[in-house]
Amino acid sequence: MWIDTHCHLDAPEFADSLSAVIHAAQEKNVKAILLPAVKVADCAHVKELAHQYSEEIPGLVYTLGIHPLYTNQAQESDITTLEQRIVESLSDPRFVGVGEIGLDYFVEDLDPHKQEFFFNAQLDLAQKYQLPVILHVRRSQDAILKALRRRNITGGIAHAFNGSFQQAEQFIELGFKLGFGGAATYERALQIRRLLKELPLDSIVTETDSPDIPPAWLREEGIAFNEPAFVERIAKELASIRDINDADFASTVWSNAMHVLPRWSALCADLPNLNLAS
Image (tube, rainbow, N blue to C red; front, top):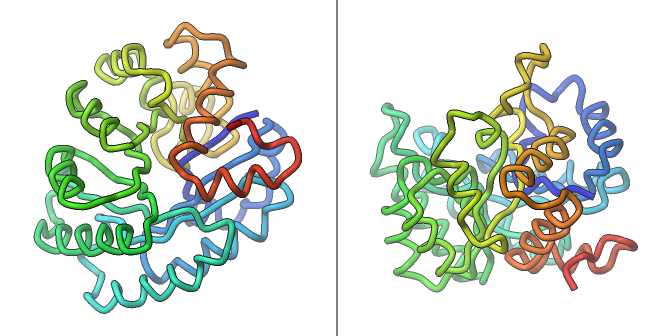
């Protein structure tokens, strides 16, 4: 069975077809999906979706946070609201951490100071409530590592990782797993493929970032956007790059995700036939 550690099911691209998207994932034996919020206004919705489709995807979970791409529109009071949403969700077994948070130094019109304010404030919340974090690390690996070292964060996932081998090692040392998905299916993605081949296998998790980061074959087959059902094919290509059989890779990345997100592991341990993390 397959796991998607990063999927935006609440994205507008899925608005008219979400039930079909969930069914397609279910048909491909996707048993666990992590749905990160990207702004405070979406917190209630991602929580609702995680419960609404829990029968089809028993390991469907969510995180709460403010994405760096949404910090220009955010208000400082959103941090207070976010903390309230986190506190309200601590008793919910489908709530597993803080995210998607981070820094993005690729998009030019983002205010770096606002990004840093919201990122640091959310790291403080993660530390306060001892929650792992789902990180957005586009061209910002060193700044994020510096912020993490100032705190006692319980680990998490560096999503869509595309840094250097040395940066990868530093995230791993801080207790993080690294997310790999459709970007690695492109033959020209030499750095990502090298990381995938050479990093410790216990540091890797699979993701789609649906509806974004389409795999290489998506447009060739006339498919409009990425979706969680494609994690199966993506993961099999990652396993091939890694030179490991599909079943072993599926089991390992599942265990990796459960290890770094303990609340997710606890949920799946209580669900029949889902505890592969023993």
